[in-house]
Each structure stands twice: as structure tokens, then as C-alpha cells.
Image 1: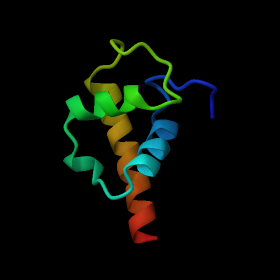
Image 2: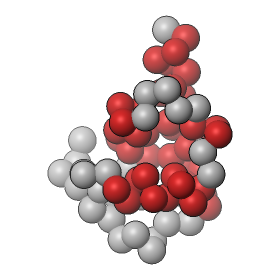
Image 3: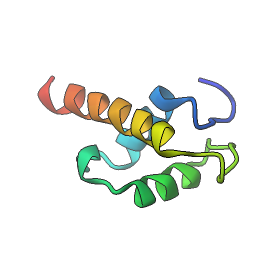
Image 4: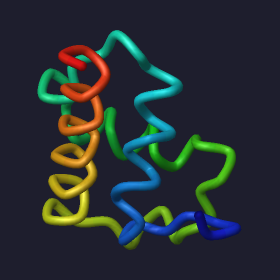
Length: 73
């Protein structure tokens, strides 16, 4: 994992979100909340204004895969 996460580190961000919010279904999270939660991660060092819908969707889908692995595995 990189020292500081950026918007393109969707899989690493997803793992941290799954650790922080283990019972939250990622598909139920609004992008406004997702943006806030990502920027509040201790390891996040990216530009808070550099996100877009595509980057947030990639994070949400990676988190969804992590969530499924943890709850179905």
C-alpha cells in the first residue's frame, strides 16, 4: 500500500473503508458521504477536490467487492 492514498488507489481505499465501516453496505452510501469518508481516512493524502463521479464509483465498486468477500466468505 502506498504511504498516502489518492483517488486512484480504489482497492486500498476500499479495504480501509471496509475496516472502518464493516457493517455498511457500500451500495447504500451516497457519493457525498463516500467523498467525505475517503478524505477523512488517516492514510488519504490526495487533493480533496480532485475526485469525480468515476473515481468515487470505482472506490464504491471495489468496496462492494471487499464487502461481499467479507460477508459471503
